[in-house]
Image (cartoon, rainbow, N blue to C red; front, side, top):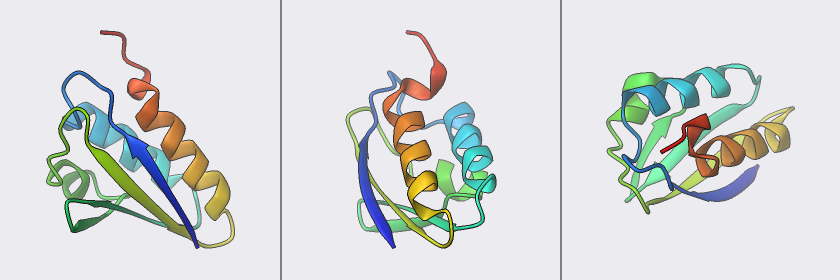
Length: 89
C-alpha cells in the first residue's frame, strides 16, 4: 500500500472538472485508489464521491493506493492534484 499526501493549489479547490479528472486518472489503474480528506474517504474512481469530499484550496488530501500499479497510481494523482489539474489561473 502506498500513502501520499497532495496539497490542493487550484484556485477553486476540487469542484466538478477536477473531480472528473481525478476519477478518470484513477480509473486508468488496476490498483484501488482512495482519497481521504477531513476524516472522510472516497473511492477515487467515483466522480460524485470525489466531488462530495468538498476539498477547498489549500486542503491536503491523503491518497491511498493498493494493488499491482499502486506506486504509479499514487504518483500520477499527486502530480495531477499538485499541478492544478492542468488549469491555468
